[in-house]
Image (cartoon, rainbow, N blue to C red):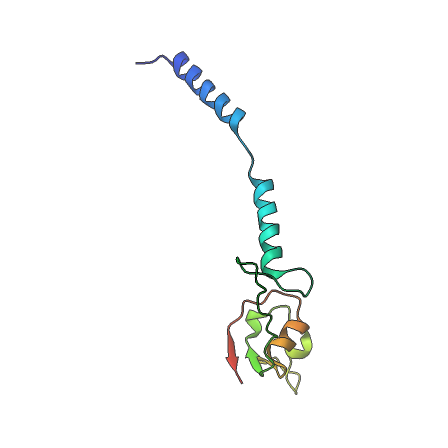
Length: 116
């Protein structure tokens, strides 16, 4: 059975090996994420490309009228949260569809939507 001094020596050697060969992955992962984001979403309004280098289709947002739960959209402008009588409403109505919703809010929108 090894002595405490021998165990400590072995641990020190393992630790030194690990620290001398350690490579932080934060930088390379961040760079890879940047490259992937640029490939998928493109720059500006140009759109991205698929793995074969072909342009991805750019489809405009839907203009079909939609209702959205106010809980799903906390950052909606107040004009969408109050009804005709000034009372809070149970759902937000966007007559211009998802395109109007996207234009009128600054939040990323993982929403559950229902049809008009």
